[in-house]
Length: 282
Image (cartoon, rainbow, N blue to C red; front, side, top):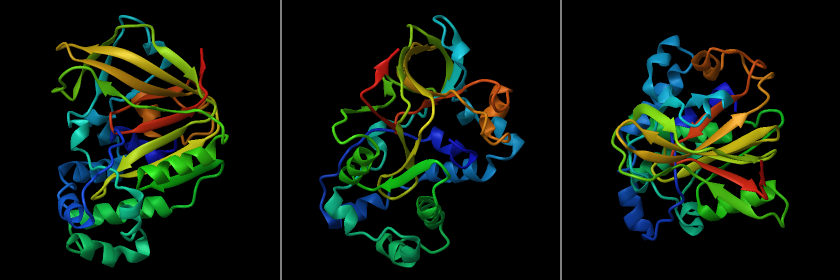
């Protein structure tokens, strides 16, 4: 995970395939880019600004030492219900809609978004991120359908690998985005030398930016309880080797550490996905 993707860790959830027709879905999905898109762009554009440390959505980072039963961690989980996020379209439908920066005028016309609107900026941003060249040692792809996500993910692992998808789940009503959560159980840890992390991007329908880095990771399933009684089974990832990370990465400022000194862990909210294969429980 590099600084370019720091903000992605705060936007998330589950795979839901739309069953609507092309005409009806085109009408409905134009309504899905809303305030959260503008908030996403605000965070992305300011992630190098020290003032963003006041942004509550940055309370997703933690260290391995925080994972003690009874320990309290301030965590931000979006209060938007997972079912309200844009749905992944069936492949036939998503393939019928242009998805390229060179086709931006046609895409804006298709969704009836004005050229200089916030929605247009969000669409342009997502297309540009999807077309960026992968970093050295990284594999990346953008998925616009469940089928394309599965095909690309399978290509990362062995063909015979058993895939498992992990997401954060709310186990109770969820109304407070930021509060102190207590670790209630010994976390389940999975050693994942290879994983595919998929981050939901701002777009009229579901687009996931997925990337792979082959390095030492630990994936944790952590049961936490909020001060108000809310319970969340959260997925967290710890990057064990940070020696090659950008020293200006926002995680180091939040955790008050620096590259190589310690691992960096972060929670995945409920609309992000982690794919692992044949996990080794540790």
